[in-house]
Image (tube, rainbow, N blue to C red; front, side, top):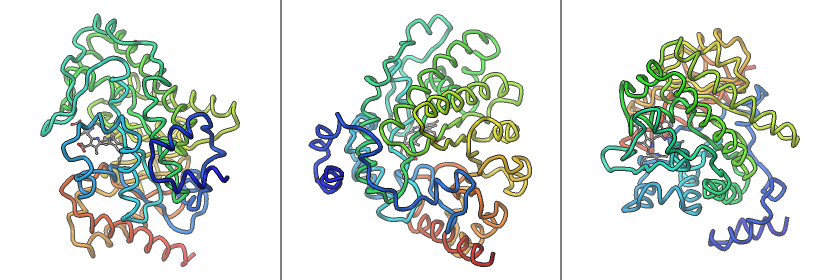
Length: 385
Ligand code: 1CP
């Protein structure tokens, strides 16, 4: 305990890391003060509806832009103290009910030996993407996750301490299909046609790559929990360009495998960490996703809250799904939109969020209004009960 206290108030993270590395373990962490998010993940009663935002650590915050100014994106990801600072920034401004570790989904392809750079004005770029199945031989198939991604684990441990138990810390990963798409496209794409070409032309090699990614992701998520993550989100950001049949074959089995394997392994050590699956634009898969071993299904804004509840039949908690662009509305209108959203989802088994990440040109004041509206209106609804 003594140790935890001195760590929590100590100024320099580097000293802390040297100190903490040999004794990593949940018992050393400060006691959690706000567990609304974790309770909601499990469908339990909460005093208010918990809320956080995808990309809450991001360019819309002036302090984020200042911290990141002139620094390479992936070098920032490799610095535990920088990740910790960027994770905490939004928490200093807004009463979010969860923190999400600052990192990126593309650290996995990097760990597999691929070069990924963040190009200004373009986004993440792979100078040498995978072109044909033979290229799989160039990848590191057996990745030593503890070595290659240790910097993420250090960032999580440090951040969990520095959060001082204020809110839980979410760890995350990209899902296999989404990572495969980046590795073949070499960056962002609207059609994912190069990656989809593999699905139709090279189904065996596609499965080989998806399996390889799944194994690494399982290790990676378990490492995040060991480092201190209290919930895990799996981002299938490119679900929308798959049709139902391709989703059934190339995404869903791997999403299920990840949750099952992570949970089985955690159970062995008596741990139970809620998992969230967010398949953007994957509404065709909602019924299946609600039966995939995840406690929470994240939703984008194209799904009506009531219909999402009906289609998931109370099997899971739901997270989402305000259109991020609604944050361009005046504050009174944001309150009205939040009110409708809360009334559609109900207050139980629900985590308010946006349907995707915040954009850089959004006004932090409106983000504050969104958080405030969720807390105020959900308390109002809960008091009526
Ligand atoms: O320089 C910068 O600041 C670039 C902006 C940025 C940020 C803030 C990128 C580049 N990544 C991140 C951090 C990040 N990425 C987080 C941090 C935690 C938080 O949410 O606050 C998370 C969870 C991610 C996950 C991520 N990266 C996803 C999944 C979520 C989603 O947006 O669907 C994806 C697809 C990426 C790839 C990526 N990284 C960055 C960009 C601009 C992109 C998208 C590129 C594209 O497809 O066009």
